[in-house]
Image (tube, rainbow, N blue to C red; front, side, top):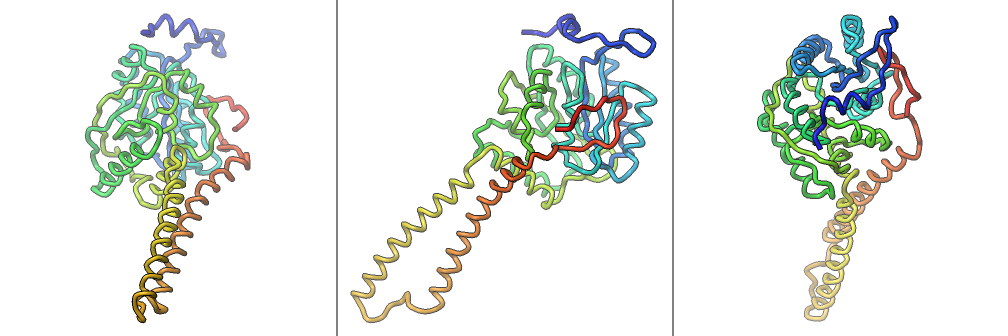
Length: 340
């Protein structure tokens, strides 16, 4: 069912400014996590304002400072003073991109939320097409990368491999070549806010919800300024592990299959050894070297299996501790609720 402007405005409560005049609630919230993006933020605001004013939609820009070490927080404060439609919060330390997105979703006010990177790799000029698809009745509109500028061959190769691996081994239909750039309807956001897991993989959580989803192609741009905060293997591997362990039991199943396979191979080996003993005085499998190789091999398999179990167990441990997902240090234009 198509969403009209009239339908959207009738469900939003009317609040008032300090002078008693009605405050127009945003229809569209743009959410951008921020980590050491001081030189980018003014340009981000300029382009978002330019695009959103062309659409005629009431909007807000919510910036979540994920414990930046530069002056990103000060820039957010200055933008809020310049334009109250820019709202923000700053963490007490770095909690990670996924948690920053989660915090932003807790405080956005729009009927639809556009999640985009602060570095302008997700161009604001795509927003109007996303909004148009949302108006047609889609609950999630995600960007499909047709081209990725300014990225190394290693990043492109590993990203392509990762998405295809996840697509194969998970029980969730995660679209290929998609990132976090997407528009979500308010009811999708409300459901996400009630999913409290700590090792979060939003690119899988959102497809898992269902609802009406559609992709639109776009060209991912190079960073406007600064360096990528997510390019090394050390940064990408934990993200991949969170994705796999959140939506697939395949690693645990592989450990089981490997155990049964080695047990069957051992049974066959016993038969072969007995036959060699019966058929001749010499045994080609005898010797210390063979025994050590077999012991080391089995020990390695056992340690790998324990490591796989440990990854899942560690995530269970994180959940049962019950610590808040994030801690907020400062806010601009946001009234805090208790952290979850």
